[in-house]
Length: 256
Image (tube, rainbow, N blue to C red; front, side, top):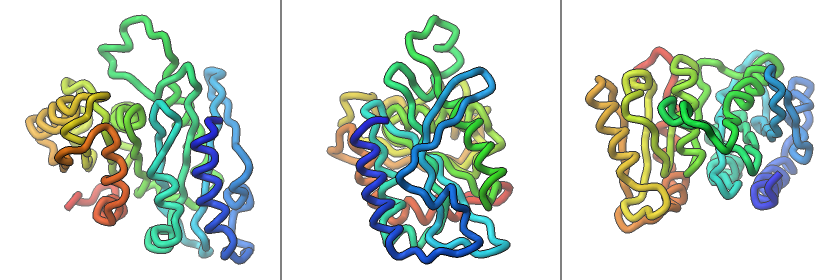
């Protein structure tokens, strides 16, 4: 577990959990912010993750889930932001934060995976773990979202490539993907973010994906921050508009 991510998530979870009153309808597993969950996929891949539940879970109600993918440095800005007091009240949801290993990545386009890879794709195992969570918690399968920064931005595209009919919407930040797969992704509501001064992941990667999605018949949203480098996730996740758009999305409904 990367220390920076663990500290950020734990601080947000501990802050918000102090005001939560115990209810019989709340799933005990999701209420334990300090425990790191482990999951073993069918192919033997082991992955760790954290999950946070809404502050209050009403009997008979199902809630959205946000899959938050960290970057190469192990940090996710989306999860702590959603765990903050204001957003946790505005947008009650489950948050799943899987952990890639140091030798792993989330996903790479099919063209690149044909070559021998030095790192292992951890996203398939994370999605299997998510499937298991759906069976345990009151999760609305029509409102499962994915977002991530940097390597997690690439992984966000990878998630909807692996499961184009699974996610209600995606927000890739400072990432990219193979434009030739645009036809596969075009039906998923996507809001792409990037800084125009990104020297780590070229802005062109997001520009090309947005253009390819439009050419394929999709309707992606694209925001490019002027004068911003690789940390475009700060502006992205600080904006209430990002979250308002995301939580409005629902499978089989218009993205507007």
